[in-house]
Length: 208
Image (cartoon, rainbow, N blue to C red; front, side, top):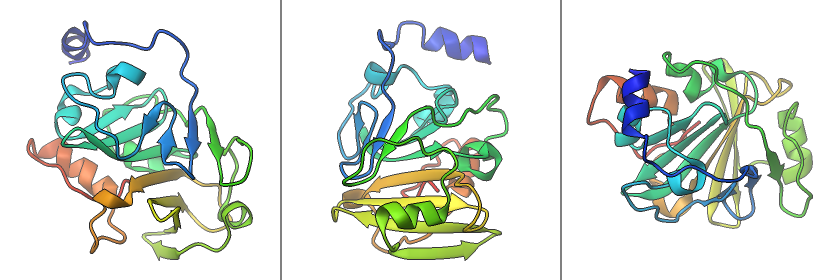
């Protein structure tokens, strides 16, 4: 399978210089990529960060980069969302895709509004409150806490942890223009798992 995937992506573009991975919360950017922008086929976001790990998942809208701890959601070639692994991959949507080996944590920095870039390793929910203020919503379900922030009236972010005192496991972001108005807290782990088993599956839900 790996050989077939490598063969399919053999002529795809790859970055020629190191990627500066920074999640800019105020502007909806992840490294060189902008939420809400269109990245047309055939190569999509590969022009900036190289081909994804799985062709099958890519065809369903999920571009997976386990070496960066990142998952991107492209709908009709538009980058609508992302997920970055900050802590334990097993507690994230990427960890639910069982055949992906060696999922690493996000290697870059996070920029909170009005602050300098900071490494997010070790952040807790209390650290978020210190940097971003009171969250817009807090959900406690399935033995984990999800904290939601809406910034600049354009971006919605979900931070997950096992408890409020635990280290954050992931951060997911979405462009609100492509966010279903009736979708508040939907598990992407279920969406990714269903996409593995259903060739036509793709959902417009949160990557958290």
